[in-house]
Length: 222
Ligand code: GRF
Image 1 (tube, rainbow, N blue to C red):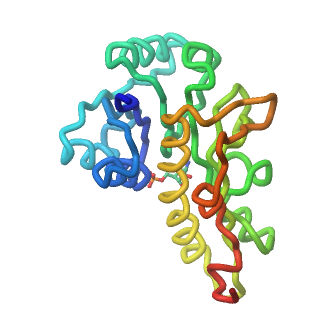
Image 2: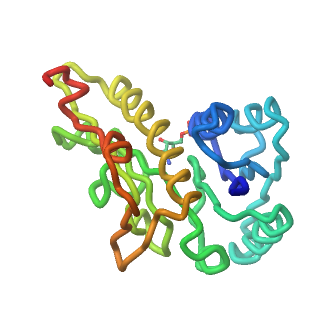
């Protein structure tokens, strides 16, 4: 089996990019990051790409240029690297049908809440302020809606009375760094089947199950 070729799209810190790189290095993820694409040339994620000798491409979104045309440029880059799966990792731009159709069900995103609760932005704060007892993170395929695509894998994070928004964010990010590489590996192994809204995992087993994290594990009551 050859390594699946990834493009990772980033706008910020890039801790998810880092966990993908680390999992590739640890041979838990049979993939290669062919290119890191960013709309923000200041993104710290680009330092991580440079440190790992991964090619970088900066996208210029200009108000005068249609988003579809900007995405044509991205598609060109993706094709030039023979990218098989597009991984959005903190990419702060909305994607149009141009890119979605060019890589249909080949674009994944990670979202720091348990979808369909709290789509959109600033959702860790929104969940915290709402007072829900459980939140978490979701890896999903990207469709034309905002955070509405078929869900691949989720991890649950309890909100404790003693939490601040920051401590909660830390625990969500910890889980993100576990489930995103797993979702990519399942895709790479050809084990994800989209049936309508549902994504079924072939040979779903204990190993896979252990990543659907029981919230009580992290409360220490098991
Ligand atoms: C993550 O919380 C992810 O869920 C959201 O953006 C954040 C990116 O963080 N989509 P990082 O840049 O990977 O550190």
